[in-house]
Length: 469
Image (cartoon, rainbow, N blue to C red):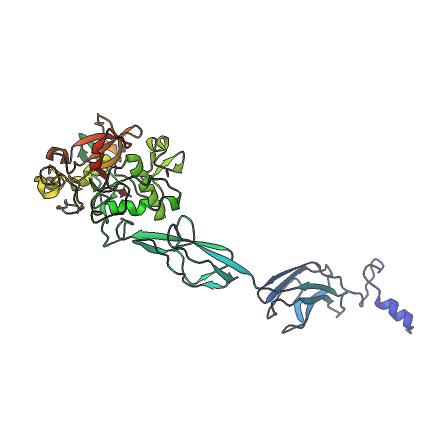
């Protein structure tokens, strides 16, 4: 067949759109790709599209200008994406995209432009009251090396965590894929911190209950294993934690807590800071426990309306506090836990279990009381410990326990009793530096109003110790 120049031109412009139904022409042009999307990153551009529906489509050809290494690239039918790497950041590239069928026919050229750039993310450090750590800017998919450790008084930095509840520790180097906040967790050499921390002043002692009932205060009680502070909370410990209240959204009055029986109220610790904190309310004690739990990334034990109690001046919340024994945080011991620990934690050891005082029948061996104290408090853990290695459960300072006061203790068997749950009076145990020996007995109970009151001057002999599961 002889074709003129005009005939050739007409033939080349023939497309599927123009072809008669049912005809097949080897030289028709393939359809074009549609829905082209570009995304840029550090030194690269990702192209994606939808292939034309031609049954004889073979591949898609992509080229760039300026030419990148490897251009042009052939992408087989059905892949519908191409990552072009090795590009110069800040340079605008024009990409041409052409469909090719099995006969080698090429579609009309499609063009698209894109400019690769480095994507940066910010890594912030929430130090939870510690010294500031400068934010870092890291390229996408770059790695963060171990950051500077913050400082917080005598607290020990326990590592960075990836979640605000501090349950997932961070491993370095850390690949950064988005804006990130890391959270500092703290432990302390003087405030008791975790169940497994060793060689600290106030290590929590595990009291494993042997799975059998114990007779306490005329009732049969079954207790779940728990941890108890080895000593009463000292003023130094109280002050360290209380000073972080504001930074953690908590309120404990700056004047709360006294150094021993006659030291400064709310003042900076002195050489007497190893004496028990006194002159604090039950409300302040439980909020302090919740604050310590938050600092260490633990679940608060005391809640009201489903939220942790964080204000010791909120009488309604504190006086109606809900205690979650199964929470991971710190709390006051229940009255049953307190007496179980004071008696040595082993009912089978009848000698220790039946001692009048915590660890002895001789009060002066284990307690600072009116007969030997010269009417002042003394440093914690300066008398003998009981069978569990716990100190000062008799004498030195009375100790708040969790239970609201009730005159008559139930006689029916109970499991993990928490006593009364609401009220303006709470129970205290253990006797103090200015009480007679009888008040230091492991079975002696007494109540006190749960708030600071000018009419209750003897709260200068009242402190607390902490417990947890």
